[in-house]
Amino acid sequence: MQALTLETGAEARVRNPDGPLAAVLVNGGTARRLPGTWSATSEWLAGRLAPRFPTIAFVEVRYRVKSWHELDSCVEDGSAALDAVARRAILVGFSMGGAVAIGVSGDSRVGAVLGLAPWIPPQLPLEALAGKRFDVVHGAWDRWFPGIPGVSPEHSRSAYERARAAGAEGTYTLVSRGLHGVALRRRGRLVTLPAAGRWLVPTAAALERFAA
Image (tube, rainbow, N blue to C red; front, side):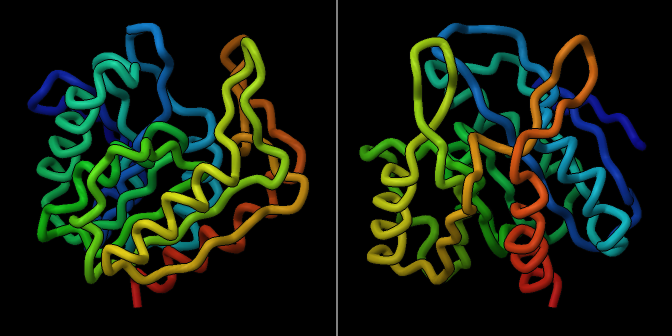
């Protein structure tokens, strides 16, 4: 795995660094302004999908600060990752990363956006998705509870419909019994969530369409 320090000071790590295409994976965040961490969901998916897609460089981004109150900073980090790999890319945004991916999607190198349980606030402009592919995968049981992060499927479905109205094409997939993402990190180790495997099929399908 290749490690990168981005121009913004954020970090990235890359599987399949020689692939002619790229999947830039951007993470979720919190209300608190905390130092960035590696996404358990992004790591779980990249670890399983990179061997299946050797022509795609899987680029996981660790923000400088992971907070939706620092969304512009996170978008800058995502854009810096795109600059670092300098190739045609699909943006894969988990949770708050959905908003980050859309913030970067106006770049001409972005061919598609995949939202995984994406948080996309109603005031976020979606015009940059016009003419591009925008697919969403969301866990049916995903919810926000006090002290437990989550995004409801109704939230992402509303954003998906707004994106379609703005000129995007895509699919919306609800994962039966799926929660918020596919993995958590505990004591430095990945813990797989229930129904995690069901996310792989629609995620792989989005990558196949992008790489075709």
